[in-house]
Amino acid sequence: MSVRAQANGRTARPPRRRPAARRNPDANSGRIQWDRLGRIAFVALFFILVFSYFSPLYDLAKTYRQAGSTKAELHRVQAENTQLERRVKHVRGESVLRREARRQGLIVPGEQAYVVNGIKR
Image (cartoon, rainbow, N blue to C red; front, side, top):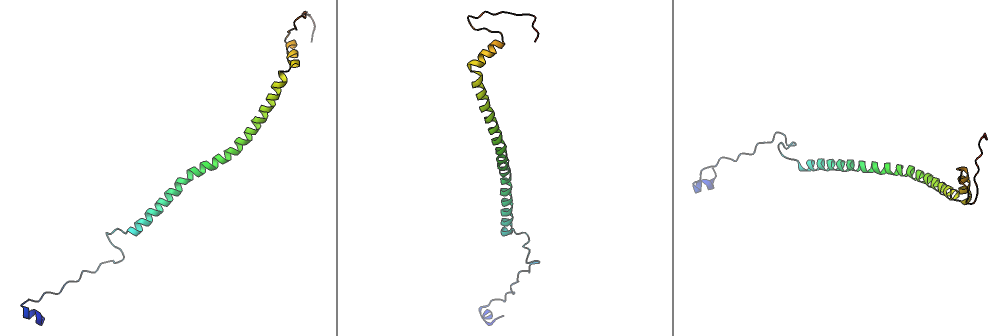
């Protein structure tokens, strides 16, 4: 005991015990390593975001390719439409109507129709 402790009438205290040494100081057993968990969560979130962009990008590329073929078909159909419109204008002409009417056996007002039988074509 120290002199001071003896003078005050105190008894000697036993020395403090040091905490037991950890078995493995690198592995904090039972503790959550927030920095590692944060990195893992960030990487997982990054891959989820990248994966979520694949489908829209695929659809965009597919639509772009499809637009080329659709545009070519549009030009083809427009050309066909122009040709058919010209044909309609031609068919509606007076001479074509008269020719078709004659072919079907119609006559112009004031004409007299004759039927000839026995002619081979």
